[in-house]
Image (cartoon, rainbow, N blue to C red; front, side, top):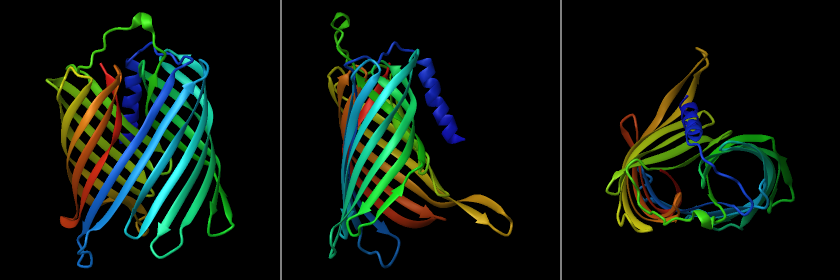
Length: 357
């Protein structure tokens, strides 16, 4: 019910914000992700007196180009590195896609297309040989792009994995899989050809009533939705809410984090900001009583978090910003009022935010 409500809210937002957006030849669709985390976790166990330290780094730039007014070609390169003192994981993948926009309904664009993925995961373990997996997959895709503004679109995508081949460097065996269907969604950002006749002086200020929106979701297999929205009130102050809902293999989670942010240098293209937030998250599992033939949800744990961040926001265009941030989060987990563990996370990365005025 919560997933349905949030999806309907995003959909209605696209209906109410009518624009004159066009996908024309020469337009670019840009996206990407950069994450870096260092974790130090302490468990409530006599055998875990030393903290478990781990790290992860992930970089995934994405770029597509409108070859004609209807045909888009693009790709994504994903590079990752993660592990701890025992092992290292290094996934690298290349995605190539083609997309055809065949129908326009006001600010809605229907499309279909395909995607090829080439993925290699290298695993290095202490005292053992390096191992690698190669995965090649082909996808059929169909969906709708809802333009919230001229440079910001909300994408809903049915992603069907037709076939996937996986090989292991330690053996000559190759496994074949496929038939997975997922519903995915995220914001997409566009750079359109410059229209010099309509050029105006750029305005880099945030006004009361402006909104910053973001987040993503995926349905099918591991289901999750993570929307985030902030509203400006004046003098550089914004308050917002980050929510997280997930479900996977009879387990689920539900979290909410109120946040407050303060921007400095209001009239400049580049702005410094500070952010603080505190949240709570519950982890749940579905239990079945075979004797009574009933199922119910039980609480696995509760997690309390406190976070702080400092960032630099730079306007790429009047419609969206690119932010660099450094954050620190402390999490404490409990089960039946008993302390389970303490997780300290240091992270930094890049975020693209869509601005609705």
